[in-house]
Image (cartoon, rainbow, N blue to C red; front, side):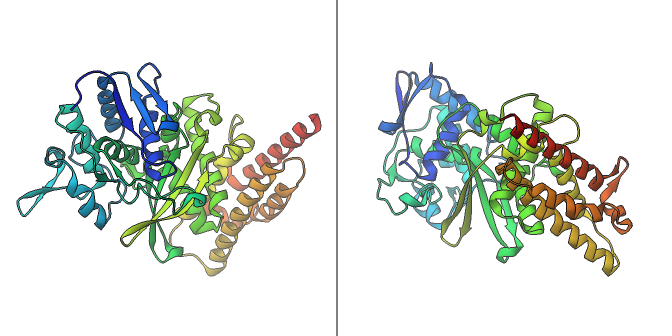
Length: 405
C-alpha cells in the first residue's frame, strides 16, 4: 500500500483494448505536473501517490461509480473472468461491492468491480498484488495486424483496476441488431493516446441520447448509427460519420464554437460482439467531423439535423396505413439512406462529384406527395422541401470553395 512518494502505474500490453481503456482513464486528468506518460516503457509515473488516488476518484465519479449501488450498465464480464480474474481479487476489494454466494462475497459485474477498486484505493485498503489476469475484453487486440501476438498476460491490481475504470468510461452502449439475428453489440470510444479532449468526446457522444428522461442503454451516437444501419441500410462507416455529425450539431449548439478536430483527434469506435465465452472484435472505425463540416456547421437549420429529424419521424411513425402509403414511406426511407450516402461521397470529393444532385433529384417528387405529409411535416412546413433548399445551398458553398482554389 502506497501512502506517499512517486507511484508507478504499469500499462497493459500495447494494442490491447485494456491499454486503450487505460488511455481513457488517463484522459480524465491530463496534467504533466502530476504524472508523466512513458509509452515506450509501458508505464505512467505519478509524482505523488495522492495524485493517483485523486485520479481514480475522479474517473469513478465521471463513470457514475461513486458507490456500488445502482451502477450503470457497463461492459460484459465472461465466465472465465469470474473464475480467473474476479475470484482472484483481494478480499477487501470484493467485500466493498460484492454480493454473497454461499456466504462468500462475489462480484459478477464489470462496473461493480470497477467501483470496488476505486473505493478500496480511496480507503487506502488495497495491497499491490501481482499475478492477476486481465479480463477477456481487455486482451482483445484492437488492430488486426497484431492479432495473435504474444505478451505477458498477468498484471498487478492497479493495471487491472484502471482498465476496469477506463472500460466504464469508454463504454458507449449496447445495441441489438435484428439483421444479425438479434445479436447485440457493445461499443467503446477509445483514444489512441491520453488527451484532454476525450471528456468532451464522451459528452458529445451521449448528447441527445437521454431518451424518455432516463439514461439509455446506448449513447445518442451509437443509437443513431444503429438505426441508420438497421432501418435505412446505410453502411456502418457512413452511418457512424453521419451519427458523429448529428451528435456534434446538437452538442456544439449548446457548447459554442469548438473545433471538433480537437476532441475527435485519434478517436475510434470499437464494436465488440459479446458472444459465448469470449468477446469477438467486429470493427474499429475512426470518428470524423467530415459531414458536420460540410452539412452541420452553418447557422440556422442544418442539413444534418433536417435529415436526422426526418429519419426520427419515420422511425416513430405508427398506426395503420394504406398499402400505397406504406410503400411510399418505404421509398422515402430508401431515398434518405441513399441521400446520406450521397452526402458522404460529395463531402469526400467536393470538387470532383455531383452526388448531391442525385439526392435532390430523388427528394423532389417526395416533397409534393400529399400522402406523405402527415408523416414528414410539422408546424414549420415541409421538412423535405427545406432539406432540398438546404442541400442546394450546401452544394453551392462547396463549389464556391472549389472555385477559390
